[in-house]
Length: 638
Image (cartoon, rainbow, N blue to C red; front, side, top):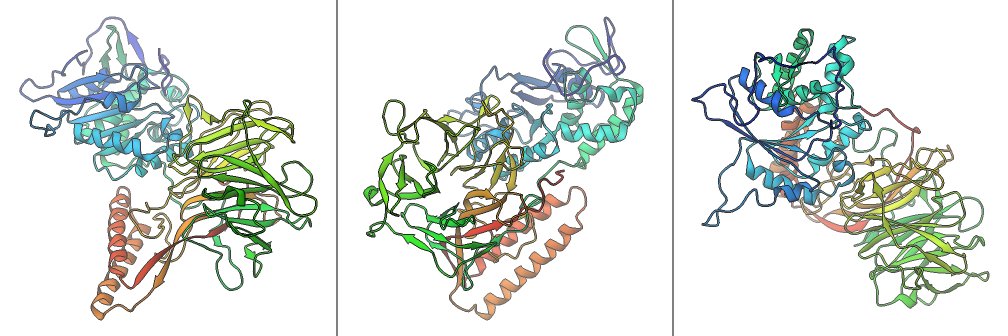
């Protein structure tokens, strides 16, 4: 029996050898609710991770007692990814046109952990586009599993939302249903079977209710279901009122889904833009890579800021969120004192300043547009040595194709370094130092893997080492092109790191191709007020001395410049949109169950219109730096 999200015990489910129960459904083909009624065509795609294999039987019985004749087609995954299952399901007809819907609804069983680890929205959006062509309703079953809690369920829901606007899509959260049943069922004996540890037929019955109640109104629940083996599943009478309440809540959309309803994790303060006394620090037309290094040797780190791709780098004094009046030292490509002039002809980014060889002198880790990484060591006289390419065991240059960011740190307790690198596609790699500090060699970069999946974020992966939970093990904090920053906890040992599912620290912003400025729709932020933007490069360190790691981000952003006055007609139109936007925010504050989604959609449309009509402004590409103070080691998650 496969694993499922509900345990089967004799208190909840009785398997009887030979009976023909009320509400029985045929094992194959349509149920026999009405011979004249056309069948409700339903497709099941993929293999449920947590199922006892009886969902179809329970769903057909549910349809039969409610007058719905179901015609179910099951398309198992057999180890294939979802995109392979979908190949060929929507084929053009002879005229090259797409046919009509093949089904009334499609139920997707994706692997429970995939959405948490594969977060790149492109493939998921392609899948949903094909699914939307198969049926007018797409039900995505989020199967519970032992490691999925409310915070991780919110992550899965958020990833689905980030894939795009698909009105046909409806996520079905088994965890949310389980929580509701626990609250309503209390300590009833049959509730002992509701767990995410292993499979039960009662769990499949609850899944059938989730699916059926999403498609039609359930007026009656079957109490006995004939299974494929000839046995019978019997539902305890005392469970029916609670299960009926669940069915009604699912049908009316009042089962609350766990969600990320903030822009920044609850343990983080609102971001503060790093500034001098006069202005925010900014690089024109490019992103910023931040770093920390005790440049003056006084025990207090300075802030190192590098412009992506230009070879420009500056060192600033740092006092909380305030910078000194001007850089302490700076380098530009081509200037006589620039240590990486030998790399001219490439796009060059200083990725990190560190003391690689433990001689209390600054060294540079530099990346190039060819994907190569080089080390430039500091000398005793304050100058810098030659460019040293990082090489593998064969003496070949270590290369990360489409390199975006990299950093070295001590992932393990021993003094050997570990390199973590991210590429433009959102992949994250680890490479371990071997050999001596004087002549290091590096292992072939291997992808960070979580369970059976390789971690992939939403492009432009910018990983950094940080002991975020203060447990003595180095974790990863990783930025991505979407503007999000996630924390990947190290749950392994000193000898062998292992990684938990990512948790969001900073949520994504609207796509750069959609809005001209970064915009976060979760918090009530002034539209024109700057906020952290795209492709953040994070570092984590205790900036304020409270022994908690804070977060510093360098981003890609756009500065808003007002260059003319609006005409009276334009001003009236803009003022009307501003008023409408404020009204929607006020309604959101008091939104009831099921109302928030429509209000946020309306708010989005008004925001788009407001940006379009504000023709007195232009947008200049730049990079900014942000400080997010850590308020607590951890904050409760929903």
